[in-house]
Image (cartoon, rainbow, N blue to C red; front, side):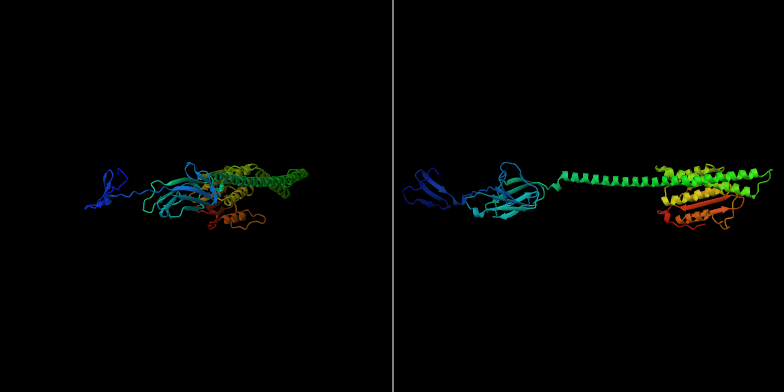
Length: 412
């Protein structure tokens, strides 16, 4: 309007026209108003964050979100209280609010006229709190008031704590492993010490005793020869002395071989295999023996349980010892064969042989021991011999199953 004074001093001061418009006389002319064309101006409220409290303690710096700095919540704090408002002079009682903690809330939380937001036990992380207001006519503020909140984790939920925990677990695992290795080494040293002690005892007592008996028998043989004034055929006494000397020499060789086995520590994996141990046995039997002993190993090697290999080794040792000591063999063949599903150990000699059906002489339990060892591991033992035709001893063990030590095969 050109002038705010609407009274012209005459009558009427205003007039309603047929189209519904209103006409008013002023000092500077007529002013008209069309009531139906009036547009209401809607004013959007502006939300603001007033203050923040952490565990009921007000936070001064950064609480209004104006500085742009993040609000840091120390580790261990549980409650966050945010106070907000929207200044309005038209109808403050009609204001409604909504808020959201982005990263924690999935959608807006309608708070109505309440001007406080409460959060408890918020996980560690970085969040953004937003709040907006409406004047009651459905018009929400175009821009929301925001504040960044950073919740610090407890020490046991930090990356450096996880790293420290992993290092502790690794050190503990290594410590257990180191203690286990030390325990095994100590046990091994104890076993080797005991083996050396037994070897010394055998050398100083049993072996020396055999040497003394051998010397005494040698002197007895010489005395018997010198007592005869003329050459004659050896009598039964000389034959008995010679057989006793032979027995003493054989026992002395066994004692020395036992001492060597006790003192030789085979630590590498290859020396612990059955073929290597059997080869060492053959070499030991070959020393001091006139018989030619030959070992042949065929097939693809497969490791078995230690107890099973020990029993097969003992069977081979006993068979070779019998061929050298009792059968008077000149040639002994040892065959170790790994078949697809079987392990076969065969010892053959060209000695004087015997009748397998005959009873075992008193004091000789070699064959009985081999049968018992074969039965213990479920092996099949076959003995073939006849006087003057040598002896063949074969032990067959099924190794196709997962637990060969528990397999039982009919013994021959």
